Length: 144
Image: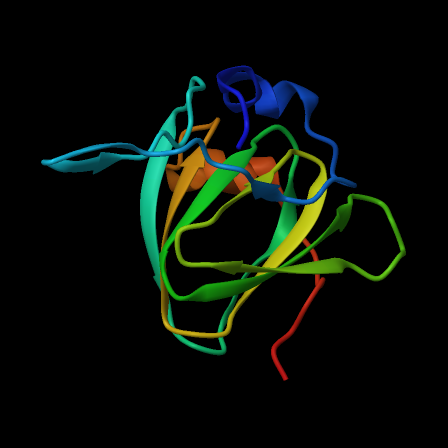
């Protein structure tokens, strides 16, 4: 379990060499159900993304944006490496109920191994003009 300090300061301290999985705090549960704290940072976008099995998203890096992705349903093979590196990307499987973090200046791609729904919570606005101005497209991973 992480501490609230880590949840609040993650975007300021995260290093792309770290494991991208974010340890979530324990849910607050009672007879009504539960509340799971996800992110306690200033953000300008929250989007729900659905992706079909065996498709790929991202294949880019962000110049200034960072994002948290929380998997609601399905699974993602998340590929990542520091921007500018020629090393093969690392791969982490992210499953339902898990969250991962992508800092700026991190090459990344997502391969959906199942039909998947996830929340993407980001630093910058997600309107198309702002989004496109902040990314550089690369070929990090292509589905077989």
